[in-house]
Image 1 (cartoon, rainbow, N blue to C red):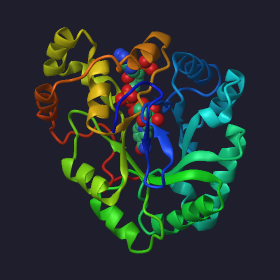
Image 2 (cartoon, rainbow, N blue to C red):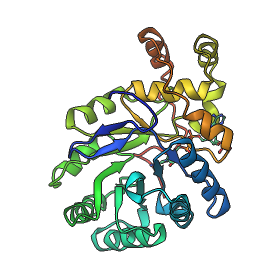
Image 3 (cartoon, rainbow, N blue to C red):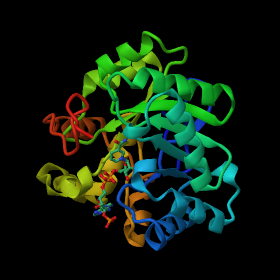
Image 4 (cartoon, rainbow, N blue to C red):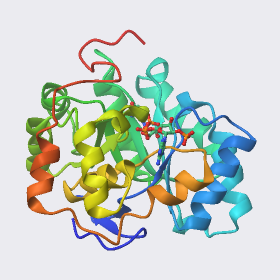
Length: 277
Ligand code: NDP
């Protein structure tokens, strides 16, 4: 991944160029909160928003995009089908409902939010149909471990272009990263800042002086240098701006390795092999 600036992109397996930096909006409240956050992000140069039906803020995301007067084609919109809607027909319907709430007629990326057993292969068929019909520019999965990818590929016609999973200095999953790479699947990090926990890691605080960057900036830059797309969430204007100021420094190879050493296989979210929602 060649890292240039906030508008830099990475080519997915189908040739579509996806911005490798974006704004996450999980837990950003629908209405003013998410509308303001996206407004500030777009002003700061972000062109990629990551939402999901489950976040219940797609209306606000759509409203923010409309208010920005930026051409829809210049903004990358990702959404995800929620677990209770999985299955072929219900996914097709859920996708249309997402489009309606977002006020758009296509998505840039649609993901299976979690690998719901006995459901995700049919859900994937629906995503393939939506892709073939040109309603979405790229399709992918989220929270898929190696064995979920293997199971999916037994019936899939199209290999997922993205796998979005929990990824941060305490949970690197090098084997999963490598497996995705070998399958041509681009990895994307969720909770890159560990929903705030990352600020407690002493070793990262030490690097802040060296690079004159804060912990969030170091971790987000490390994401990109690992070749992983990143979508930090914030609803605070200063933090939204500062999280994007990661294109004017480079973490040395030695420090990249130091950060890799922080891996503890520690999850802050659910285990994809054991979730009950
Ligand atoms: P993040 O790791 O992005 O952390 C967000 C938290 O960190 C918020 O509390 C935010 O508070 C705070 N924060 C952000 N920037 C800073 C900063 N510079 N300094 C101090 N605090 C900061 O967590 P998320 O779980 O939101 O992950 C990012 C995105 O990934 C989500 O929004 C969502 O789009 C996606 N995601 C996908 C999942 C999936 O299953 N596919 C699961 C979870 C997330 P504040 O807003 O007040 O700034």
